[in-house]
Amino acid sequence: MNAKKMENSRRRLSSECETLIKSINRNRLAVVEIATEKTEDEGDLATIYSERNILNSLHESEFARLRFSQEALKALERGQYGECAQCGEDIDPKRLEALPSATLCLGCQEASERKFASLRLVPAGQKVEEDAW
Image 1 (cartoon, rainbow, N blue to C red):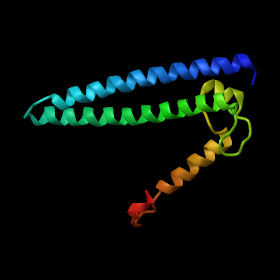
Image 2: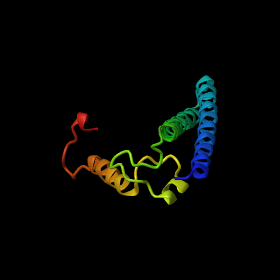
Image 3: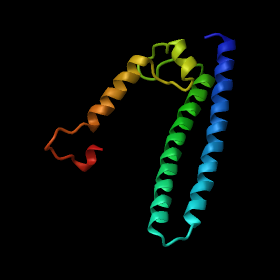
Image 4: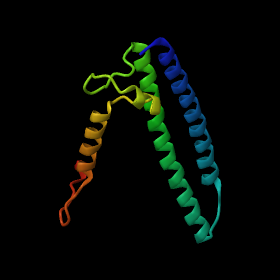
């Protein structure tokens, strides 16, 4: 990867990190605001509970995206950006263009997703052990 593309990737990743940090902070403030709402109405309580769950899900998702972007920035600093963290092969430049925080090549990403999905599948009538999750 040439220096211009590396700098462009660094700029995009840094910008994404800043945006995610701002969003995470806004969500934290929203959760605090929701937590301070006082009501006895069941409909309002259900809405508050739902909004809190949505914000928590967004918060977790944004933290994960931030972690991936930060890891990609570290890989850039080490000179390993664009290298698959699993197999060591180069990640397709088009993939990095679309997803600058990608740490796995498409093949390894698909294999990882298949493995994760298969861990969640439970045949009908069978019980899942707690430590399986």
